[in-house]
Image 1 (tube, rainbow, N blue to C red):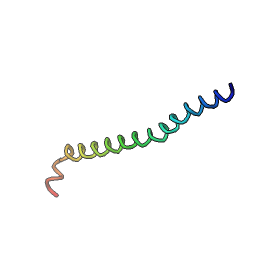
Image 2: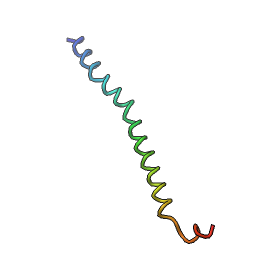
Image 3: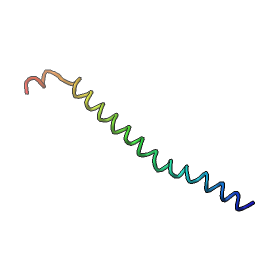
Image 4: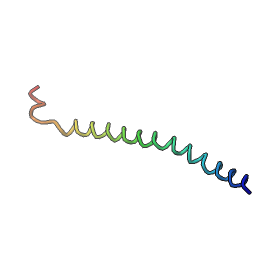
Length: 54
């Protein structure tokens, strides 16, 4: 019975461990894409009079 519990624990913990390693990379990639888009959006909207005189 103890061996069965250890086996189930290993089967459940392994995918959770792999997910915990992969999820931060996907979230950081999304943040980078959002920041790049936000920066591009700001640069196109922030054209004021000062930009035309430089």
